[in-house]
Image (tube, rainbow, N blue to C red; front, side, top):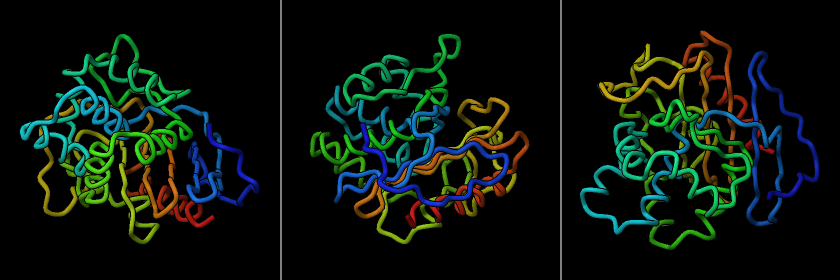
Length: 251
């Protein structure tokens, strides 16, 4: 479990937004910013890191597997995630990774929604723990492969949503990121330039949209999870989480 921060930074959370965040400094081994770190959110695409690690832990990755894993991690491809989720036994993917990584708040999707990997529950402190496992405990081959894809995160997701909110806009490189979004519809109102939205993938909205930005920024792990009021546009939510991330990452 992460240590308690030595000081409480002044961070303004936008009105109406439920937010949790944690910043872990790997050099000092301390949490330097934190808010409601045990509060759970639906994971959206952040869970794709766990899906990838689980598959790589149990299989020798083939060229065909790489052709799915690369866009799943770089461009948040939902079709690839659904395929690995099915191969891994759905909820068993999460059950295995909870035990392996030592996660405290993470849980599989509800029993009545077994195919919806984006309904996985997770917390900011568990996402930090996931990155600490990836950086410090995962086999070298897995660590290098996953981090390479997160460093090469594409501006656009395969579903047409812009992935450059939060860390990519708020913090200068180098960084390696995995973003998450859900509840803004199956296709964006303003498609990311140069990308035609894919036709596949379940609708992960549950009435209120979520937007998450997570990743490694130099020697820090930065995790910001947000739930926005119903009807919030993707542009408005992206602006809010970017402003919040700029404050949190600057601590």
